[in-house]
Length: 276
Image (cartoon, rainbow, N blue to C red; front, side, top):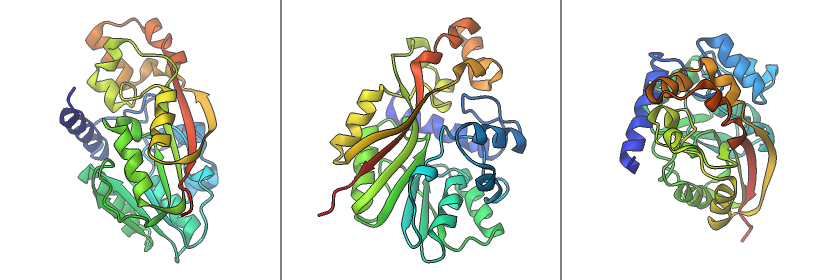
Protein backbone atom coordinates (compact mmCIF):
# COMPACT_ATOMS: atom_id res chain seq x y z
CA UNK A 1 0.00 0.00 0.00
CA UNK A 2 1.10 3.56 -0.65
CA UNK A 3 1.84 5.83 2.31
CA UNK A 4 -1.31 7.96 2.04
CA UNK A 5 -3.48 4.87 1.58
CA UNK A 6 -1.99 3.34 4.74
CA UNK A 7 -2.70 6.50 6.72
CA UNK A 8 -6.25 6.65 5.39
CA UNK A 9 -6.92 3.02 6.30
CA UNK A 10 -5.43 3.39 9.79
CA UNK A 11 -7.32 6.65 10.44
CA UNK A 12 -10.62 5.10 9.35
CA UNK A 13 -9.99 1.97 11.41
CA UNK A 14 -9.30 3.87 14.61
CA UNK A 15 -12.18 6.26 13.96
CA UNK A 16 -14.48 3.24 14.00
CA UNK A 17 -12.95 2.11 17.29
CA UNK A 18 -13.52 5.56 18.77
CA UNK A 19 -17.13 5.44 17.62
CA UNK A 20 -17.41 1.89 18.98
CA UNK A 21 -18.54 0.58 15.62
CA UNK A 22 -16.07 -2.31 15.78
CA UNK A 23 -14.14 -3.98 18.58
CA UNK A 24 -10.60 -2.82 19.10
CA UNK A 25 -8.22 -4.22 16.56
CA UNK A 26 -5.19 -4.86 18.67
CA UNK A 27 -4.21 -8.46 17.92
CA UNK A 28 -4.15 -9.66 21.52
CA UNK A 29 -7.72 -10.66 22.13
CA UNK A 30 -11.05 -8.96 21.46
CA UNK A 31 -11.85 -6.04 23.75
CA UNK A 32 -15.58 -5.92 23.55
CA UNK A 33 -16.02 -3.81 26.65
CA UNK A 34 -14.38 -1.99 29.53
CA UNK A 35 -13.60 -5.20 31.43
CA UNK A 36 -11.82 -6.74 28.44
CA UNK A 37 -9.77 -3.58 27.85
CA UNK A 38 -8.78 -3.67 31.52
CA UNK A 39 -7.74 -7.32 31.26
CA UNK A 40 -5.58 -6.57 28.23
CA UNK A 41 -3.95 -3.63 29.96
CA UNK A 42 -3.08 -5.78 32.96
CA UNK A 43 -1.52 -8.33 30.62
CA UNK A 44 0.79 -5.74 29.07
CA UNK A 45 2.04 -4.16 32.27
CA UNK A 46 -0.46 -1.73 33.79
CA UNK A 47 -1.23 -2.02 37.48
CA UNK A 48 -4.66 -1.81 39.10
CA UNK A 49 -3.80 1.55 40.66
CA UNK A 50 -2.96 2.98 37.23
CA UNK A 51 -6.11 1.54 35.67
CA UNK A 52 -8.22 3.13 38.39
CA UNK A 53 -6.50 6.51 38.03
CA UNK A 54 -7.68 7.41 34.51
CA UNK A 55 -11.07 8.64 33.30
CA UNK A 56 -13.62 6.03 32.29
CA UNK A 57 -13.40 5.47 28.55
CA UNK A 58 -9.74 6.46 28.23
CA UNK A 59 -8.48 2.87 28.17
CA UNK A 60 -9.43 1.16 24.92
CA UNK A 61 -7.09 -1.79 25.36
CA UNK A 62 -5.05 -0.80 22.31
CA UNK A 63 -1.49 -0.93 23.63
CA UNK A 64 1.29 -3.51 23.73
CA UNK A 65 3.16 -2.28 26.81
CA UNK A 66 3.28 0.42 29.47
CA UNK A 67 5.67 3.20 28.35
CA UNK A 68 4.84 5.41 31.34
CA UNK A 69 6.14 2.82 33.80
CA UNK A 70 9.68 3.14 32.48
CA UNK A 71 9.70 6.80 31.54
CA UNK A 72 10.78 7.99 35.03
CA UNK A 73 8.54 11.02 34.75
CA UNK A 74 9.12 13.79 37.26
CA UNK A 75 6.94 16.57 38.62
CA UNK A 76 7.01 19.65 36.43
CA UNK A 77 8.13 17.90 33.24
CA UNK A 78 6.57 18.21 29.79
CA UNK A 79 5.65 14.91 28.14
CA UNK A 80 4.53 14.21 24.58
CA UNK A 81 2.57 11.07 23.69
CA UNK A 82 2.72 9.97 20.05
CA UNK A 83 -0.59 8.45 18.96
CA UNK A 84 -2.44 9.25 22.15
CA UNK A 85 -5.80 7.71 21.22
CA UNK A 86 -8.41 8.38 23.90
CA UNK A 87 -5.72 9.67 26.26
CA UNK A 88 -4.95 6.68 28.48
CA UNK A 89 -1.18 7.15 28.78
CA UNK A 90 -1.56 10.95 28.73
CA UNK A 91 -3.67 10.87 31.88
CA UNK A 92 -1.23 8.52 33.61
CA UNK A 93 1.63 10.85 32.65
CA UNK A 94 -0.36 13.87 33.82
CA UNK A 95 -0.75 12.32 37.25
CA UNK A 96 3.04 11.93 37.44
CA UNK A 97 4.10 15.39 36.25
CA UNK A 98 1.52 17.20 38.37
CA UNK A 99 0.00 20.65 38.02
CA UNK A 100 3.33 22.26 37.21
CA UNK A 101 3.91 19.78 34.41
CA UNK A 102 2.25 19.38 31.02
CA UNK A 103 1.26 16.49 28.78
CA UNK A 104 0.68 16.83 25.04
CA UNK A 105 -1.15 14.08 23.20
CA UNK A 106 -0.88 13.90 19.41
CA UNK A 107 -3.17 11.82 17.21
CA UNK A 108 -4.22 11.96 13.56
CA UNK A 109 -7.76 10.67 14.18
CA UNK A 110 -10.23 13.47 15.05
CA UNK A 111 -12.68 11.01 16.59
CA UNK A 112 -10.03 9.80 19.02
CA UNK A 113 -9.12 13.36 19.97
CA UNK A 114 -12.77 14.19 20.57
CA UNK A 115 -12.93 11.24 22.95
CA UNK A 116 -9.68 12.25 24.68
CA UNK A 117 -10.78 15.86 25.13
CA UNK A 118 -14.11 14.76 26.54
CA UNK A 119 -12.31 12.45 28.97
CA UNK A 120 -10.08 15.35 30.07
CA UNK A 121 -13.07 17.64 30.51
CA UNK A 122 -15.07 15.11 32.54
CA UNK A 123 -12.18 14.50 34.93
CA UNK A 124 -11.00 18.11 35.04
CA UNK A 125 -7.47 17.53 33.75
CA UNK A 126 -5.94 20.99 33.34
CA UNK A 127 -2.41 19.89 32.48
CA UNK A 128 -3.26 17.84 29.37
CA UNK A 129 -3.57 19.15 25.82
CA UNK A 130 -4.53 17.17 22.72
CA UNK A 131 -3.35 18.16 19.24
CA UNK A 132 -4.38 16.89 15.82
CA UNK A 133 -1.39 15.85 13.76
CA UNK A 134 0.68 13.07 12.25
CA UNK A 135 3.59 11.69 14.20
CA UNK A 136 5.83 12.07 11.14
CA UNK A 137 5.25 15.83 11.51
CA UNK A 138 4.80 16.43 15.23
CA UNK A 139 2.93 19.67 16.04
CA UNK A 140 5.41 20.79 18.71
CA UNK A 141 8.37 23.16 18.85
CA UNK A 142 12.03 22.18 18.76
CA UNK A 143 13.60 21.32 22.13
CA UNK A 144 10.29 21.70 23.96
CA UNK A 145 9.59 18.43 25.82
CA UNK A 146 11.38 16.36 28.44
CA UNK A 147 10.06 12.95 27.42
CA UNK A 148 8.44 11.35 24.38
CA UNK A 149 6.32 8.26 24.96
CA UNK A 150 4.32 6.06 22.59
CA UNK A 151 2.39 2.82 22.89
CA UNK A 152 2.08 0.47 19.92
CA UNK A 153 1.68 3.31 17.42
CA UNK A 154 5.00 3.93 15.65
CA UNK A 155 4.70 0.56 13.92
CA UNK A 156 1.63 1.99 12.16
CA UNK A 157 3.61 4.87 10.66
CA UNK A 158 4.82 4.28 7.07
CA UNK A 159 7.97 6.39 7.67
CA UNK A 160 9.28 5.29 11.05
CA UNK A 161 12.67 6.96 10.50
CA UNK A 162 10.94 10.32 10.19
CA UNK A 163 8.96 9.68 13.37
CA UNK A 164 12.12 9.15 15.38
CA UNK A 165 13.79 12.19 13.82
CA UNK A 166 10.77 14.26 14.81
CA UNK A 167 10.85 12.84 18.33
CA UNK A 168 14.52 13.80 18.57
CA UNK A 169 13.74 17.31 17.29
CA UNK A 170 11.08 18.10 19.89
CA UNK A 171 13.05 16.72 22.84
CA UNK A 172 15.13 19.05 24.96
CA UNK A 173 18.84 18.25 25.32
CA UNK A 174 18.98 15.48 27.90
CA UNK A 175 15.42 14.45 27.06
CA UNK A 176 14.41 10.83 26.72
CA UNK A 177 12.42 8.55 24.49
CA UNK A 178 10.41 5.65 25.92
CA UNK A 179 8.24 3.62 23.57
CA UNK A 180 6.45 0.30 23.67
CA UNK A 181 5.99 -1.25 20.26
CA UNK A 182 5.76 -4.40 18.17
CA UNK A 183 8.75 -5.55 16.13
CA UNK A 184 9.53 -8.60 14.03
CA UNK A 185 12.04 -11.29 14.92
CA UNK A 186 11.60 -12.81 11.48
CA UNK A 187 9.70 -11.77 8.38
CA UNK A 188 5.95 -12.29 8.22
CA UNK A 189 4.37 -14.11 5.27
CA UNK A 190 3.49 -11.79 2.38
CA UNK A 191 -0.21 -12.55 2.79
CA UNK A 192 -0.11 -11.07 6.30
CA UNK A 193 2.11 -8.12 5.40
CA UNK A 194 -0.30 -7.11 2.64
CA UNK A 195 -3.43 -7.35 4.78
CA UNK A 196 -5.19 -4.08 5.53
CA UNK A 197 -6.81 -5.66 8.59
CA UNK A 198 -3.41 -6.72 9.91
CA UNK A 199 -2.05 -3.23 9.34
CA UNK A 200 -4.70 -1.71 11.54
CA UNK A 201 -4.00 -4.48 14.03
CA UNK A 202 -0.35 -3.40 14.26
CA UNK A 203 0.99 -6.54 12.59
CA UNK A 204 1.96 -5.83 9.02
CA UNK A 205 3.35 -2.38 9.80
CA UNK A 206 5.95 -3.86 12.15
CA UNK A 207 9.59 -4.00 11.01
CA UNK A 208 12.57 -6.12 12.04
CA UNK A 209 13.87 -5.43 15.55
CA UNK A 210 17.38 -4.48 14.42
CA UNK A 211 15.96 -2.11 11.80
CA UNK A 212 13.73 -0.48 14.43
CA UNK A 213 16.63 0.11 16.83
CA UNK A 214 18.86 1.42 14.04
CA UNK A 215 16.18 3.96 13.05
CA UNK A 216 16.26 5.30 16.63
CA UNK A 217 20.04 5.50 16.66
CA UNK A 218 20.18 7.10 13.20
CA UNK A 219 17.82 9.82 14.44
CA UNK A 220 20.53 10.84 16.92
CA UNK A 221 19.54 9.03 20.10
CA UNK A 222 22.24 7.64 22.39
CA UNK A 223 22.21 4.74 24.83
CA UNK A 224 19.39 3.04 22.94
CA UNK A 225 18.38 0.02 25.00
CA UNK A 226 15.63 -2.57 25.05
CA UNK A 227 14.39 -2.46 28.62
CA UNK A 228 11.96 -5.33 28.25
CA UNK A 229 11.08 -7.84 25.53
CA UNK A 230 8.42 -10.52 25.31
CA UNK A 231 6.97 -12.71 22.60
CA UNK A 232 3.63 -11.34 21.50
CA UNK A 233 0.91 -13.94 22.14
CA UNK A 234 -0.49 -14.33 18.64
CA UNK A 235 -1.80 -17.73 19.63
CA UNK A 236 -4.52 -15.76 21.42
CA UNK A 237 -5.73 -14.39 18.09
CA UNK A 238 -8.12 -17.29 17.48
CA UNK A 239 -11.19 -15.19 18.35
CA UNK A 240 -9.77 -11.77 17.48
CA UNK A 241 -11.53 -9.78 14.72
CA UNK A 242 -8.19 -9.07 13.05
CA UNK A 243 -7.31 -12.74 12.85
CA UNK A 244 -10.80 -13.67 11.72
CA UNK A 245 -10.60 -11.17 8.87
CA UNK A 246 -7.23 -12.50 7.76
CA UNK A 247 -8.32 -16.14 8.00
CA UNK A 248 -11.56 -15.51 6.11
CA UNK A 249 -10.11 -13.28 3.40
CA UNK A 250 -7.09 -15.43 2.62
CA UNK A 251 -8.22 -18.88 3.80
CA UNK A 252 -5.26 -19.13 6.17
CA UNK A 253 -5.46 -22.11 8.55
CA UNK A 254 -5.61 -21.19 12.22
CA UNK A 255 -2.52 -23.27 12.93
CA UNK A 256 -0.63 -21.11 10.43
CA UNK A 257 -1.64 -17.99 12.38
CA UNK A 258 -0.44 -19.63 15.59
CA UNK A 259 2.83 -20.46 13.86
CA UNK A 260 3.53 -16.75 13.43
CA UNK A 261 3.76 -16.30 17.21
CA UNK A 262 7.53 -16.56 17.23
CA UNK A 263 7.80 -13.81 14.60
CA UNK A 264 6.52 -10.91 16.70
CA UNK A 265 7.84 -9.37 19.90
CA UNK A 266 6.67 -6.56 22.15
CA UNK A 267 9.57 -4.36 23.24
CA UNK A 268 10.09 -1.37 25.49
CA UNK A 269 12.88 0.87 24.19
CA UNK A 270 14.66 3.74 25.90
CA UNK A 271 16.89 6.34 24.25
CA UNK A 272 18.48 9.64 25.26
CA UNK A 273 19.10 12.95 23.50
CA UNK A 274 22.57 14.11 24.49
CA UNK A 275 23.11 17.28 26.47
CA UNK A 276 24.57 20.10 24.38
